[in-house]
Image (cartoon, rainbow, N blue to C red; front, side, top):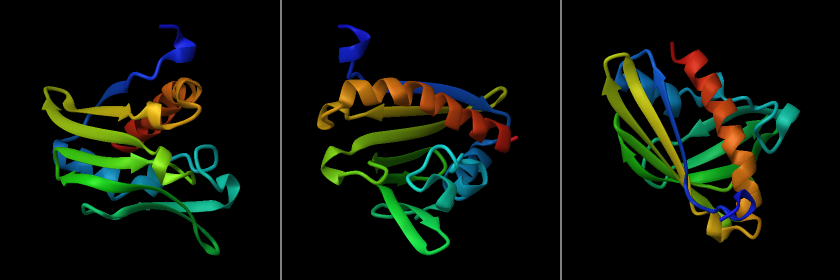
Length: 149
């Protein structure tokens, strides 16, 4: 299978030098403090905040000065401080949503955070989108690591 046709799940693993509870809280409750909204959002310069409603069925919503700009997804798995899962369709059609699962596991150096982004087959541009998300998640998770120190 060539890269252009790859729709297998993306898997990203990082280690943050904090405990599991803090790693989970920073990822879920403090997303606006580290997420690069200026470049990785629907509203870009107009985006000022993103909030994850912390419960199954909760939304992930991007806000601007005038209120809601876009729904990014819906929480499908909420098990603090070990797992959060959500559909992922920033500003797009929920029928084409991917599924993101993030797990938090204690390690000797802090917490290993693993992100798995699946469901590319639901998108018409799944393989192409996956290529962009491969580097995009690296950048976003890098911002998270910088913040969660």
